[in-house]
Length: 502
Image (cartoon, rainbow, N blue to C red; front, side):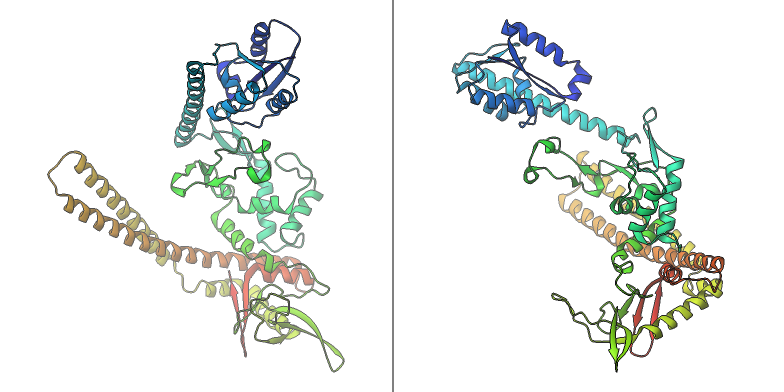
């Protein structure tokens, strides 16, 4: 039986009009008969060896079902010379004739050389196509164009202008998710609670699914696109095209490129940075703060840490002279615990009462308490920090510009010794490192200042929730939510406690 093999990749269909119908028509002419078996791979790259139709053809050749194979051109078999030679050898060693529409080759040293040269040219051409496409995509990205629809929840892709724009309906859900995660409420608890809430309300996901999952909510909470930080050329996907044809062990993983290669694109922000950064802090502690519920719930579970051994403290039930008692303890009895703890215990009733009374003081005087938590962070200080950050950034630019000018002097052939150049470059590099170190320290300090100011907002939000509910109507869950909204951690000392806010 005569076999016809045809293949076309998406890019060739679009760019060259290289249709499958034309290939099959020409191959049938070459075969000079209609009694043929067609093996067709649609939209599959020639770089991939494990293609569905090609694999079936190879198996049928091996089983002796095929006597002749007709193909338009060698590069239809493969765009890689090594793979092309493997396929050709498999076919011909079974005594099967391999015929090409566009040119014949003889089984002579010269013919084999010509065939290999055509395969090498095809591989080179494919590499050049990939390189040109990659360069073109990068250039478009540098011009501020969004290359494709990235399917980001909260945004739509405007193909005409190559931009992402806010989808107002989805943006409302994004803000709701962050509010539910960062603000005190009686609706949900944690990411799993948000996923269940959105599912129950019939809110569809970006792909139209009816069910939300915890991991989808987590990805949304971690997405920096929502504060206007959208990057292209961040991920290296080279070699991943054929993953669907490979086993799990052989699949090529997606890797992150160095940050200096990322290309930032203009993106409208949906959230403010303070809310997003606060969500990241909560995310980093979510496993501890919203632990799985046990038989008995504890008001401060996930927030307490022993000041002596630094172990987290959990609620436990015990007996004292036949009476049931509840304590928080740092003792870790499970197998594999890194630190067994120092054995500190504190009464659940006493600690809960002390912490809640402190929170009540804050809620009844939010402005005064919030001002205290700012730790004397005055506006003038923040303004000075901003000015100094601008100055350091300007100095770093000058240093980098100086290095470029120095290097250009070398290319211009100006009379300057190699030793002088090396010394000057070394001094400029050291200066840049010092400036960068100072800038990083100042940016961290400013970040802390901003966080203290945001802490004021958190306490005011908690107070609003507290007064809206009514002092006598607060449930256990309300109290738990309020405490977690303003308290980052509680350290228990021998004779006192220390409450740390956000």
